[in-house]
Image 1: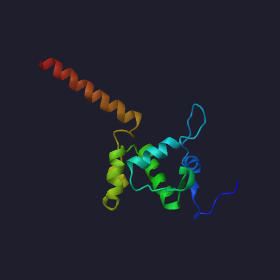
Image 2 (image 1 turned 135 degrees about the vertical axis):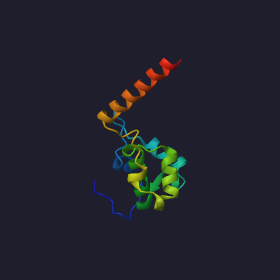
Image 3 (image 1 turned 30 degrees about the vertical axis):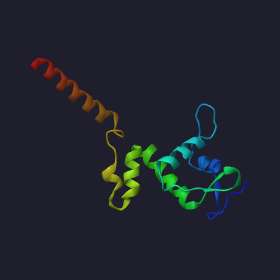
Image 4 (image 1 turned 90 degrees about the vertical axis):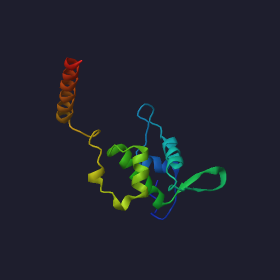
Length: 126
């Protein structure tokens, strides 16, 4: 199958494949994820033609790629992505990087030790 030109519309299945939204267990495309994101993010506006099939233009596809990146790679929440999209000119990805989710094992172990020590101190007080 030839790749469509950048100006052509893509089906929801083609977009799911481009975004690598594949169910690991059965290998099927997770198109329901895109439909869910459509409900959550009003900026995504596919064209719906006959047969109620969804078609996405390049702008929508780029937006979906950004949403996927922020959710899956940067550890944003749905609300965090919504805020980012509303006010993205004032955000810097390095500042909004969710370090509590994306930390190294060493950092995580250190944080757990601190919490454990605090819990021991609290028990001694009580």
